Amino acid sequence: MNKRIGMYSSIVTLIGVVGFALSMFIGSDDGSYLFSLFISWGFVPMICSFSAVACKENNSAGYAAIAFSAMYAVVVGLVYFAQLTTIRLSELNEQVLAILDYKNLGSLFFNYDLFGYAFMAIATFFIALTIEVNNKKDKWLKLLLLAHGIFAVSCIAMPIMGVFSSNMKDGNIIGVLVLEIWCVYFTPICILSYQYFKK
Image 1 (cartoon, rainbow, N blue to C red):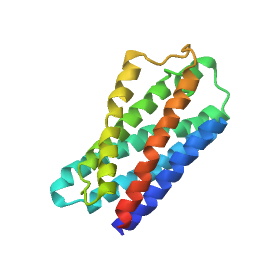
Image 2 (cartoon, rainbow, N blue to C red):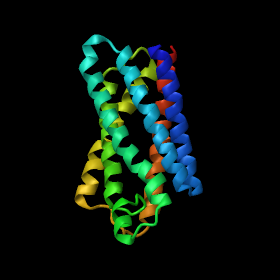
Image 3 (cartoon, rainbow, N blue to C red):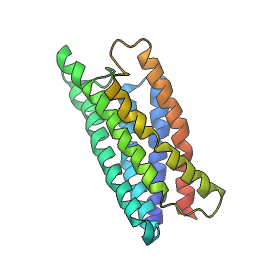
């Protein structure tokens, strides 16, 4: 059952990543938010599955990964659900939108989103420590997960340093490009995770 859930959740995460990339490409904000929720709904059980199949001596790393993945899902879930409901369906004044609208670079919810992805990155780092390398695919999976953990530093540091702001020139284009690159990076993680559970 653990491996089966791992396989299915890897597929859900992959669908979320591909759907997110396509939504950004065609300029569908609502699609991007919805598929971002799918990523989190697949990611948490995928991390739990990695932890479940890991050897006992790696339990602490697995538990840490589960905790950070849950924190990621809660934070980004609140951000994207708010965008799909309150922001989309309500007539809010400019001051409220400046705080809650994800599309406003440097807004509270934009910064919360980056904070959530820092938790995701930390989760991938810890879960990489539980991966047992038996072949080249496992080695690549472990390396990609470990390297993904580095994103946590930028996700926390950039909002604190005020890198993003509403008057940033070409900020939206740069943001979309960075996220598309992230999708290209995370897609093989989903595929290799599926293969890791399938064997």
